[in-house]
Length: 218
Image (spheres, rainbow, N blue to C red):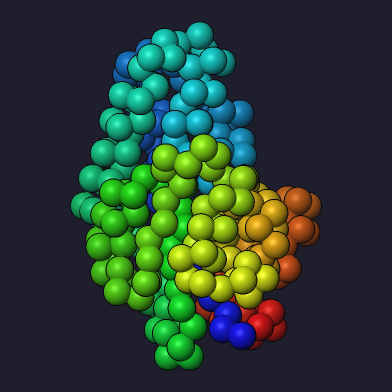
């Protein structure tokens, strides 16, 4: 059986989660005078941007008809900042090279919009490692629903049980397990003690530990 490796993008391949938070805070303060705080971003990692912004608009009684425009604004600005100053996660190229040398297929399956995935992978110069770039954009349900991961398995013509997902967020981990896939989690340092990550098959602190974890799970 061929083992396929499915990568989340934000927080796994690129250090972009702080960029998303900063841009969302700036735009909501500028447009609505709303100060987004820590509670607004709790468990937001891995959630599709339109779903996240809809939550803000309900919480702060903001116009729901403006969600799509705000989402486009945020995605564009996050993409611009990443392209201007791309921050790959430490060890990303070495890991992708190792997996490629061992002949394992790799795809990206992200909650980010399709054009954002392409922008980021191009900015990091790692697009060529992945056979497909799959977005939850346009799906009825994003993570923690397993749809984006199941689509990845389908595109690769492999059984979900033969897939290993690399994730950083609880929502992504839950989606991967719901898809009956194995999952390696690499939480942000401030989230490493979150007991919910016990659902994962392996927890690591950095990408340099991922290849050994993959070998354990194959």
